Amino acid sequence: MAGTNEQQAITAATESAEWAASKEHLKVEFERIVLAGDAAVASFTVGSNQRWIVPLEWNGREWDALGASIFDSQSRATRSVRPSEVRRSHWTVVAAGFAPLEATRAIVYFAGRDHEVPVVSGLYMFAAAVDRKPEDAPKLVRIE
Image 1 (spheres, rainbow, N blue to C red):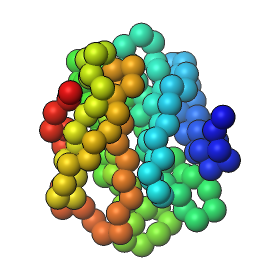
Image 2: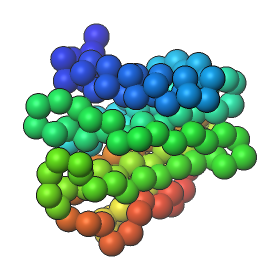
Image 3: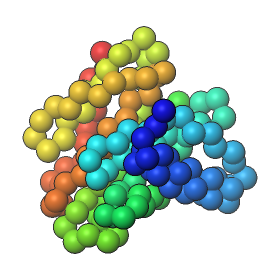
Image 4: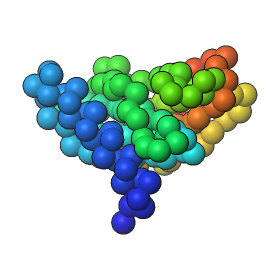
């Protein structure tokens, strides 16, 4: 069962994804969420081969969705580096993408080091909160 903080993040992401999808006459279904301190990334399925990715930031009271992006089997991945809408010098960084179903982990390079993230049902997701503008966006190094 999800904790209160996780459930609040899921609720904020779902509201954002459903609102954005409704403008395009799409239906989204929550898939999973990754929380990493003050950052989070949620995925939603859109049809059989698309994902709607919602980055979130914790503003000190609640989770705020920072837009959404969609990717499919052609584009394969998405990444986002967004400044906080409420906290000066705070940035939310996310990366997500498809991986082979047999893969178990992805290595994402960010902030000068490799970060190992699990691959679940052919999808990897990475989130980080940083207190200064990142020099680079996260990069997928490899999938194992």
